[in-house]
Image 1 (tube, helix red, strand yellow):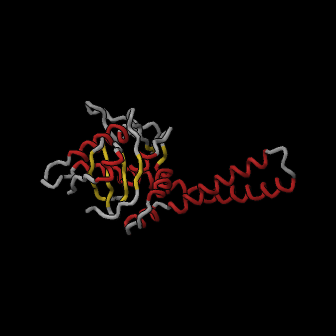
Image 2: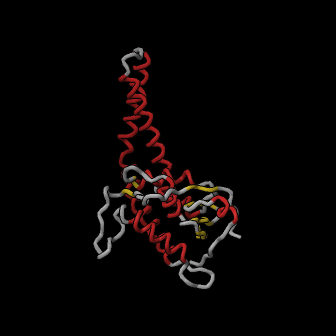
Image 3: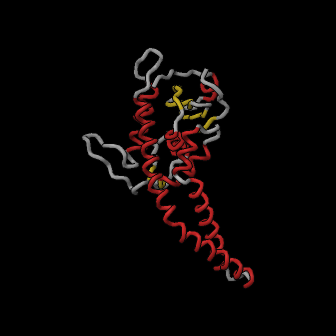
Length: 230
């Protein structure tokens, strides 16, 4: 993976230390005030979402995949579209929305101030949603299992590509090397997908979940408007 260091005037002016910006087919990175560009791939969406939204609790892979779709402002490549379809993310999004709707209906049913006709309609809709979810629960379980594997592989693949990144002179890229160490220490290890010094693997807090635990003072921001890697 070849890349090169970026020194854009915009980033120098705003003084941001940690930022990410999606371009067409690439990401522009600011890490510790230094700049670099790396090629876009599916794992970047998951990593960037975690960096921008450090979860209070580890986030399941399926939820992460759904949330990461909000970052995909650029047209997705064929591989991304195929992967989203194979993971059943559209079906998973439907199920998530139905569960949220079920929660709102439950609140109506518990509201002592609500009149009976409204409760009757809410009860009917709640039961319809419950029947649908029972009939389709196997699909959501299958999607979740496939999603854990796919998200984990995509993040590991991105990390491997960044580790191998070279600058214009063919040397290990200093900014991307520092960034990969940061990801390893604060994303992969806390998510149970790395090893502490000494070779001991760390178990994830929750199976199939991912998290990001930034060190003090590290706050990521998102930028927009980059169209090419000139």
